[in-house]
Image (cartoon, rainbow, N blue to C red; front, side, top):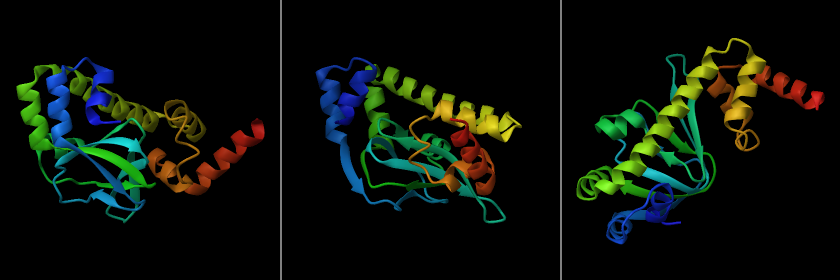
Length: 191
Protein backbone atom coordinates (compact mmCIF):
# COMPACT_ATOMS: atom_id res chain seq x y z
CA UNK A 1 0.00 0.00 0.00
CA UNK A 2 1.58 3.29 -1.04
CA UNK A 3 1.85 6.03 1.57
CA UNK A 4 -0.62 8.21 -0.33
CA UNK A 5 -3.22 5.44 -0.11
CA UNK A 6 -2.63 4.96 3.63
CA UNK A 7 -3.06 8.70 4.21
CA UNK A 8 -6.16 8.82 1.98
CA UNK A 9 -7.79 6.21 4.20
CA UNK A 10 -7.49 8.67 7.08
CA UNK A 11 -8.70 11.74 5.21
CA UNK A 12 -9.45 12.74 1.61
CA UNK A 13 -6.40 13.84 -0.39
CA UNK A 14 -6.55 15.43 -3.82
CA UNK A 15 -4.95 13.54 -6.72
CA UNK A 16 -2.23 16.23 -6.88
CA UNK A 17 -1.42 15.76 -3.20
CA UNK A 18 -1.37 11.97 -3.55
CA UNK A 19 1.01 12.28 -6.49
CA UNK A 20 3.32 14.59 -4.51
CA UNK A 21 3.37 12.12 -1.61
CA UNK A 22 4.17 9.23 -3.98
CA UNK A 23 7.03 11.24 -5.47
CA UNK A 24 8.84 11.67 -2.14
CA UNK A 25 8.07 8.40 -0.36
CA UNK A 26 9.86 5.13 -0.95
CA UNK A 27 9.53 1.52 0.14
CA UNK A 28 12.30 -0.13 2.14
CA UNK A 29 12.75 -3.80 3.04
CA UNK A 30 14.88 -4.73 6.04
CA UNK A 31 15.70 -7.90 7.96
CA UNK A 32 14.88 -8.43 11.62
CA UNK A 33 17.50 -7.03 13.98
CA UNK A 34 18.24 -3.92 11.95
CA UNK A 35 18.31 -0.62 13.81
CA UNK A 36 16.44 2.25 12.20
CA UNK A 37 17.77 4.62 14.82
CA UNK A 38 20.36 4.60 17.60
CA UNK A 39 20.95 7.13 20.39
CA UNK A 40 22.69 10.24 19.14
CA UNK A 41 21.26 10.02 15.62
CA UNK A 42 18.60 12.41 14.39
CA UNK A 43 15.38 10.69 13.26
CA UNK A 44 15.14 12.05 9.72
CA UNK A 45 12.40 9.72 8.40
CA UNK A 46 8.82 8.91 9.29
CA UNK A 47 7.96 5.29 8.52
CA UNK A 48 4.67 3.60 7.73
CA UNK A 49 4.72 -0.14 8.47
CA UNK A 50 3.48 -2.24 5.56
CA UNK A 51 4.63 -5.49 7.18
CA UNK A 52 6.68 -6.31 10.23
CA UNK A 53 7.10 -5.53 13.89
CA UNK A 54 9.21 -2.76 15.41
CA UNK A 55 10.09 -1.62 18.91
CA UNK A 56 11.72 1.38 20.51
CA UNK A 57 13.81 1.05 23.65
CA UNK A 58 16.50 2.74 25.69
CA UNK A 59 19.25 1.50 27.97
CA UNK A 60 19.30 2.49 31.63
CA UNK A 61 22.50 3.39 33.46
CA UNK A 62 22.57 -0.20 34.72
CA UNK A 63 22.44 -1.46 31.11
CA UNK A 64 18.87 -2.70 31.40
CA UNK A 65 16.74 -2.29 28.28
CA UNK A 66 13.35 -0.60 28.65
CA UNK A 67 10.91 -1.06 25.78
CA UNK A 68 8.97 2.14 25.11
CA UNK A 69 6.61 1.17 22.30
CA UNK A 70 5.86 -1.42 19.64
CA UNK A 71 4.44 -0.91 16.17
CA UNK A 72 3.07 -3.31 13.59
CA UNK A 73 1.32 -3.30 10.22
CA UNK A 74 -0.59 -0.10 9.57
CA UNK A 75 1.32 1.83 12.23
CA UNK A 76 3.69 4.79 12.14
CA UNK A 77 7.26 4.72 13.42
CA UNK A 78 9.31 7.63 14.68
CA UNK A 79 11.24 8.83 17.68
CA UNK A 80 8.82 11.62 18.57
CA UNK A 81 11.14 14.30 19.94
CA UNK A 82 13.98 13.48 17.59
CA UNK A 83 11.78 13.58 14.49
CA UNK A 84 9.60 16.56 15.38
CA UNK A 85 12.44 18.71 16.73
CA UNK A 86 15.21 17.25 14.55
CA UNK A 87 17.43 16.64 17.57
CA UNK A 88 19.54 13.58 18.51
CA UNK A 89 17.52 10.62 19.75
CA UNK A 90 17.91 9.00 23.16
CA UNK A 91 16.33 5.74 21.99
CA UNK A 92 16.90 2.80 19.72
CA UNK A 93 14.34 1.81 17.08
CA UNK A 94 14.82 -1.78 15.95
CA UNK A 95 13.05 -4.28 13.74
CA UNK A 96 11.84 -7.39 15.56
CA UNK A 97 10.69 -9.05 12.32
CA UNK A 98 11.59 -8.73 8.66
CA UNK A 99 9.75 -5.56 7.64
CA UNK A 100 8.58 -3.53 4.69
CA UNK A 101 8.35 0.16 5.44
CA UNK A 102 7.41 3.26 3.50
CA UNK A 103 9.60 6.23 4.41
CA UNK A 104 9.28 9.96 3.97
CA UNK A 105 12.04 12.42 4.87
CA UNK A 106 11.36 15.11 7.47
CA UNK A 107 12.15 17.94 5.03
CA UNK A 108 9.88 16.48 2.36
CA UNK A 109 7.04 16.10 4.85
CA UNK A 110 7.41 19.70 6.03
CA UNK A 111 7.39 20.95 2.45
CA UNK A 112 4.30 18.89 1.59
CA UNK A 113 2.46 20.05 4.72
CA UNK A 114 3.07 23.67 3.69
CA UNK A 115 2.17 23.06 0.05
CA UNK A 116 -0.90 20.87 0.66
CA UNK A 117 -2.83 22.00 3.78
CA UNK A 118 -5.13 18.97 3.34
CA UNK A 119 -2.24 16.80 4.61
CA UNK A 120 -2.39 18.49 8.00
CA UNK A 121 -5.54 16.58 9.04
CA UNK A 122 -4.25 13.03 8.49
CA UNK A 123 -0.91 13.85 10.13
CA UNK A 124 -2.61 15.56 13.06
CA UNK A 125 -4.70 12.41 13.56
CA UNK A 126 -1.59 10.20 13.27
CA UNK A 127 0.24 12.24 15.90
CA UNK A 128 -2.85 12.27 18.15
CA UNK A 129 -2.90 8.45 18.02
CA UNK A 130 0.80 8.34 18.90
CA UNK A 131 0.14 10.59 21.92
CA UNK A 132 -2.77 8.39 22.99
CA UNK A 133 -0.50 5.32 22.77
CA UNK A 134 2.08 7.01 25.00
CA UNK A 135 -0.65 7.95 27.47
CA UNK A 136 -1.96 4.36 27.49
CA UNK A 137 1.55 3.16 28.32
CA UNK A 138 1.76 5.62 31.20
CA UNK A 139 -1.61 4.37 32.48
CA UNK A 140 -0.23 0.82 32.53
CA UNK A 141 2.76 2.00 34.57
CA UNK A 142 0.42 3.52 37.15
CA UNK A 143 -1.19 0.13 37.78
CA UNK A 144 0.52 -1.42 40.81
CA UNK A 145 -0.83 -4.96 40.34
CA UNK A 146 1.32 -6.87 37.83
CA UNK A 147 -1.54 -9.10 36.67
CA UNK A 148 -3.77 -6.10 35.99
CA UNK A 149 -0.88 -4.38 34.19
CA UNK A 150 -0.50 -7.37 31.86
CA UNK A 151 -4.26 -7.62 31.33
CA UNK A 152 -4.23 -3.94 30.40
CA UNK A 153 -1.46 -4.64 27.90
CA UNK A 154 -3.56 -7.44 26.36
CA UNK A 155 -6.54 -5.10 26.04
CA UNK A 156 -4.49 -2.36 24.41
CA UNK A 157 -2.38 -4.63 22.19
CA UNK A 158 -4.30 -7.90 21.64
CA UNK A 159 -2.45 -8.85 18.45
CA UNK A 160 1.02 -8.19 19.83
CA UNK A 161 1.17 -10.58 22.78
CA UNK A 162 1.76 -13.65 20.60
CA UNK A 163 4.31 -11.89 18.36
CA UNK A 164 6.58 -10.43 21.02
CA UNK A 165 9.21 -12.15 23.12
CA UNK A 166 8.36 -12.32 26.81
CA UNK A 167 11.42 -10.21 27.66
CA UNK A 168 10.20 -7.34 25.44
CA UNK A 169 6.73 -7.32 26.98
CA UNK A 170 8.28 -7.53 30.45
CA UNK A 171 10.53 -4.55 29.65
CA UNK A 172 7.49 -2.60 28.42
CA UNK A 173 5.52 -3.37 31.59
CA UNK A 174 8.49 -2.91 33.95
CA UNK A 175 8.27 -6.51 35.15
CA UNK A 176 10.86 -9.22 35.53
CA UNK A 177 10.54 -11.79 32.71
CA UNK A 178 10.03 -14.57 35.29
CA UNK A 179 7.15 -12.61 36.86
CA UNK A 180 5.51 -12.14 33.47
CA UNK A 181 5.94 -15.84 32.65
CA UNK A 182 4.16 -16.77 35.90
CA UNK A 183 1.33 -14.34 35.12
CA UNK A 184 0.93 -15.72 31.61
CA UNK A 185 0.91 -19.29 32.92
CA UNK A 186 -1.70 -18.37 35.52
CA UNK A 187 -3.93 -16.78 32.87
CA UNK A 188 -3.47 -19.73 30.51
CA UNK A 189 -4.43 -22.21 33.22
CA UNK A 190 -7.51 -20.14 34.09
CA UNK A 191 -8.84 -20.61 30.54
